[in-house]
Image 1: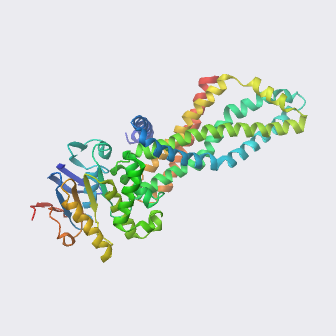
Image 2: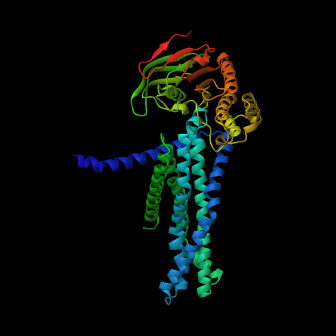
Image 3: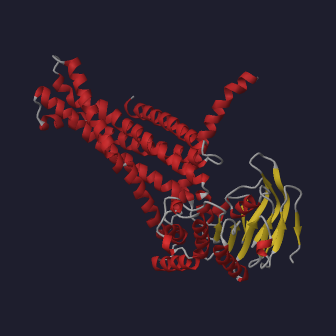
Length: 261
Length: 222
């Protein structure tokens, strides 16, 4: 019996976590619908701050990573496929490896490392300092002032950074193709365009939407659960990173199965 | 205005601090809650404000049930509450001025009205000089005054003050006492103060509630 209880405990914990996440998302959406016109400026201001931190300040990191990834991907591909007409597979390789999978996935991983952690730590510190209580007591709805702008900010940022990541990775790939085979820009882009389909765009947009939630809500959940001590902040950050990573990889797998299986 | 029925408050370790508390406070009424540290005064204020859940019992404000219920969210748009915390409570990434303005902007007041109310409150508390600074950059007494100023600017119907005079020097204490006297005399706002000692509030005409670790009693008004 004790063995079964030990076995069931993490399952129950996981289901409780999923329930809490669903509750947080639904309440944020419900309170978003209750926003009044005059409150939009305040929420918009907070959203802009989140976009500045998550997207603008991470642009160099994301673009640099993507450029290197695009370069390395084609160097490795050419080293394996040399003599087999590798230049004919450039577009398919870039679309399959980077635009479909690694672009959204690595962007999400970078944002989790940079912004999810910051959101969890910030909300945890606010909770300990009584700021969240003070906001609620003074009529400032925490769902509207804290959660909604962070979600919207991360949503816009994930979209913008995925576009930048893909563009930088393509640039890196083109650089290698040009140096190795003297491929022209027109040929390179035609090759990519032929390999791309509307299904890829739909899958990427769905990933952006779902990843933004998977990045934001675990951070809000673990940050706002902090109650007593500053030592809970690093624990919350660690749990946020693990939960968000698992959620992003699971969603990525589900979407791949849904669109391409 | 404020109704507590069979209220029980628990400590972080799960032990009950207060049990079976029944209380009615009319609009414009004043209540002074006193008791030693750890007796549950601050917790009682947070439960009344709807930011912490009681162990048991019912809390209603202005005819709205907040416990059991959604807590402070149930009051948004229906009742203005001002809460001056014993410490903290100011948003750390906003300046003192922005801290005062935020609840007013969320209420939907036009920017001119927000500006004039914030300026008047900052002047009344004498903290205009540091209004552009963030809470961590000012003295504890300035933070305390910023908490008062936020309440003053909001013009709330229910005011909750947690240890309002603690840590203030003589001059700051006089400013705070004058403000509390104004609120206590205002028939349109209900005032609840939590403090360790009642002596500093001898000027206040209020119901008195003495909390002890246990048991607890409600004394009649003087």
